[in-house]
Image 1 (cartoon, rainbow, N blue to C red):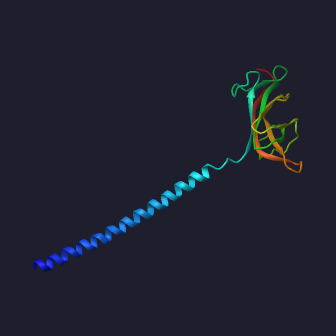
Image 2: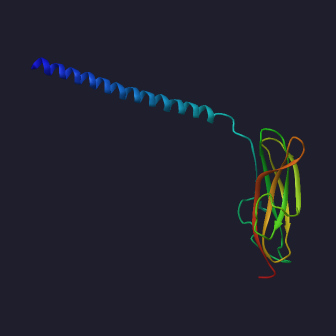
Length: 176
């Protein structure tokens, strides 16, 4: 009987080793897969970033992203200035144009289909920023959106909307 139980014990050890070997292989394969993903992510994240341009507004005269005009009174402060800044991070010189538009309705989509009140054009070197002082004048009561859209000249010289824009909401009243 001892011999028989000794054989059973050895079979149990062999089956235990086989099943442990299965776990070991599964864990090793999981580690290989995870390591491959981490190494791949590392190399992909080290690629140079895709270029971009950006546009933003700063108040006048402090050049801060705060205290924008919100309430305008006709014949008192219905004309105001804001700094419009465009940054080029495309990796090359960019020619661009900022279109200033004013709309009283809801903005249905961009680019806004309305008349251009003013436009500002400039060629900007890579890594540079261009600041321009935009003057806005609204003399009719109501709620308005002042929009600055960034358009980029493509390699053929045609203007393309960059999908970058700024919107300043203002209310215009006759008197306070």
